[in-house]
Length: 164
Ligand SMILES: [Zn+2]
Image (cartoon, rainbow, N blue to C red; front, side):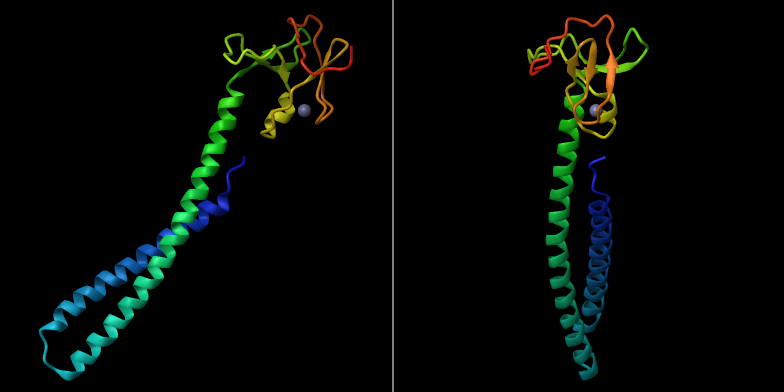
């Protein structure tokens, strides 16, 4: 729903290239160890090249780590938002009206002491909580114009209605 798949993809890419760089550094360290004992001038040159290469890789990895950290933070925020939304929706249960329509109703044991109300099932599918308003014996959604008949509505205390 709200999940940013681009973030996940870039996170995977970053983790992949950071891993590759780390591997390259480990390889270079191994080669450097071998060359350290050598007195041959060409090995010294090779050693310098390797050290230079390693420094570049480390700088690159450091920058990738920063990006990685940012991507993780972004992802964590997205997860948190998702979790909050789910918790909010968990306060409602899907019920069948007398007309066999489905509507989300605030659970009886909800602890927030809000007046009983319904939310729109169609808008919920879009991940949006839209409190329905009372219009004669219908519950009406301002957002998507859905109207659901409540022939024998539970005690409805639509809080912000001006239709009566
Ligand atoms: Zn709606």
